[in-house]
Amino acid sequence: MDLQSFIVQLVEKNSGEIAGRVRLQKLVYFCKALGADINTNYKLYIYGPFSQQVADTLQDCVLEDILLEENGIIREGTEFNAYMESSEILNNPLPEQSEQILNDVLELCRPLSTRDLEITATAFFIDRQQKVLFGCHDQNIVIEKVTHAKGNRFSENEINASYQRVLQKWLPLVKKYAVKQ
Image (cartoon, rainbow, N blue to C red; front, side, top):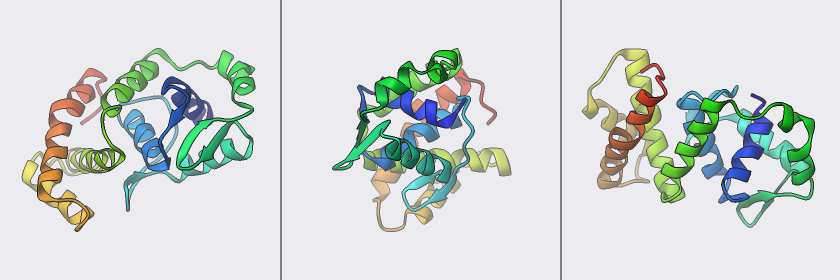
């Protein structure tokens, strides 16, 4: 699916707004990681998983007035409804599994602060990286790598809580959507 269409539909499904770029990045990241049909790549960066494609697409949406970014809030712009009614969205709705993934991600992320999303996405990214690339299932190594990646920005308790959140809430979704671990 076209990344711009996905982001616009993500904003719409989230009551028409998202609290900032970091939150948007993490929502799209989780959707992609769980198997949503979007073409974007992520690397670990300062605030966790980051995609330059997502950043560029958001900027395009703002320049085209599809989305408005004001005071740290991303919301529907003046061209939002016209875009939603365009043939792009009408002819390319979210595939059923991508829509289910998006709904699950929004439900799990809704109660989390942006800070909690950052550390949880980082823990999830590192956990998947360790399992997929290195065949490593050692939780202590994941915690150690998250601690190293986040430096002094998060306490040991925050890091441990985020990894428990990954184990209890996110990994069941990986299994639900049969994403390769």
